[in-house]
Picture (cartoon, rainbow, N blue to C red):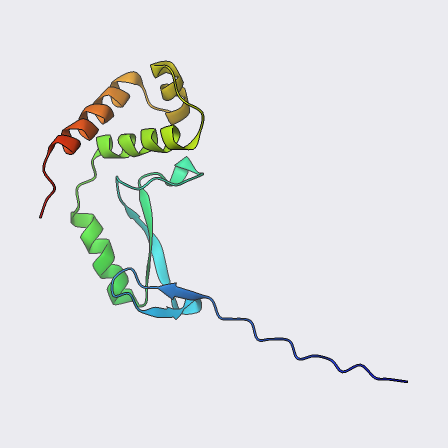
Length: 129
């Protein structure tokens, strides 16, 4: 009778991460990660994470540097609202009314109008160097 040889299973590839500060690649088990406030960040599927950016670093010092950078950046409500509107407009059927947009974003009409004004103001300014 023939004996079957057990095949050696290929080793699982270690999951790798990329440091958001220095760009080094390192094992995911060594990652230092967390959320920092960022008014330009929206989550694709969970609006509880809107306004928070997930960052990953290769060590505590780099995570602290990233967190400090975001701490100094102003948190602009209109920017967050504009990002929420963009997510809704880009991800589903066309929105025809202000009421529909308010319902899908969770924003009120004055907030939507302020977000649109903020967005339009930024579009008309020349890019920063």
